[in-house]
Length: 324
Image 1 (cartoon, rainbow, N blue to C red):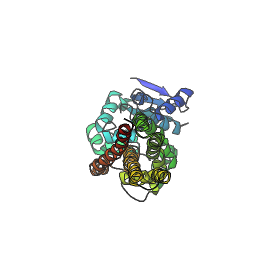
Image 2 (cartoon, helix red, strand yellow):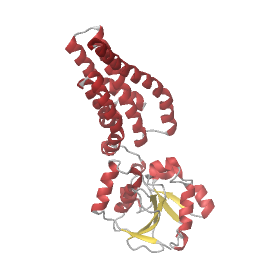
Image 3 (cartoon, helix red, strand yellow):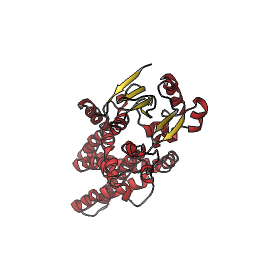
Image 4 (cartoon, rainbow, N blue to C red):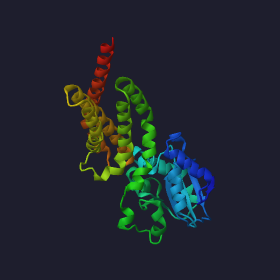
């Protein structure tokens, strides 16, 4: 049988891989071979931990098990982290059963217990695993760093079971969101600069930064539930200085009022759309909740955005006709 070796210390290559993964470089390639890994000097009574073949998930687990001899069973989640893979079904019952069988795990350890991360519970039926292959599934704490304490009596405290998504956790996903929106933002900047000048181009950048950076920072503090509604509120806030700039610089008239409305109409939905994307990175959401938001908010957001852009296009055409 093929048991690979691993260690609990990260190398420069590992840190570089983490950095590139955070910035979405070759996003689907931050993976390792699925299979069975030995950490330390495990024997037939050593615990078996289960994780995804996403390098950040695997590395978080092995670094938390320093000086603990154990086996790590890596499932094929196609380079997706445990929580997301559980939702997609790749960190799932069938893959766990299959990986136990193909690695010959029953001949490696004398017990019949595997320890899974709590965030993988959505994808794995412990009852089915027990029924199909005789292995007991035990759910460990939410975070790998609590495993050392958990292993003392295999009991998780309330704190270990509590899912937290603090400021540092939210900021960790910001680079991926920025990279994902760069192309669309660049196109918007060029078109808006041509149509309405530097302020409009700057507004596109501010809307992007509001949705990808400011939104995750302020997420718990914006006083509505839906992510899209939070994004619309934040979009309005960042649009108001541009609206004021137009009116203050040109005086209050139908022309300046229409231009101010254009900023509000395109910045609000742009920020909200990026905020809605953040549901895939947050532990605050559910599939049904996200689906409801998409159907409820995307149509009016699209209408708002189109109306805002049309206002700027109208000004651009009027300027061309005046010049002609």
